[in-house]
Image (cartoon, rainbow, N blue to C red; front, top):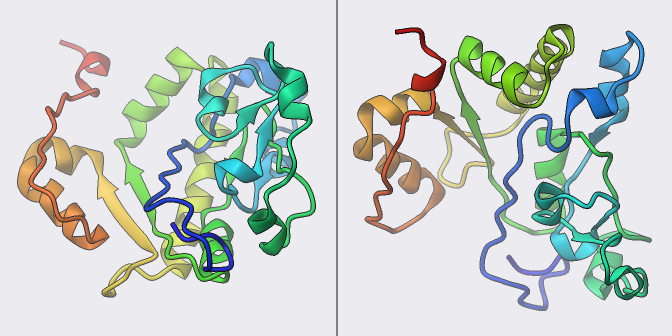
Length: 216
């Protein structure tokens, strides 16, 4: 990825991997019954490059996206100076995120495209019932909250499908079906590579994560 004014090479590619939502658990975040409104408040318009953000969360998942500031070296992080290319992108301070948050995929991708950065959203869709069961079992044991998150997350993905380009040479959106990947395997994987402009013959071991949620 070139930096946001296109003059300094930051790195070749930056991959931002997150879920909708990302981080923490429902129990730690939502209060009261107006969960949807809280989700809207916890939605970021863009996930900035790692160097432009910091996190108050002392968790491994947040540390993948931002440098944490509340560990033993907190004073070091607190003294960090916002890089110039973050200023040039229109940022006046480090970006922060709630414990559990959504990202608006459409505005996120457009933010990068508007700054001359080639950006593509890869949306991975999984069986609706199985992913809901997985969510309730692992990080959102409130069924109403889990259902509300699924509904809101789907709104975000539907908007991206309607507004971003995917049937073009350099797509800003690539749709991936988890179940197709499990069933078709390498040929489907290579078709994804092609859409993303990845020249590789690498084939990872594919393990079906759905199996554990299916009754015998």
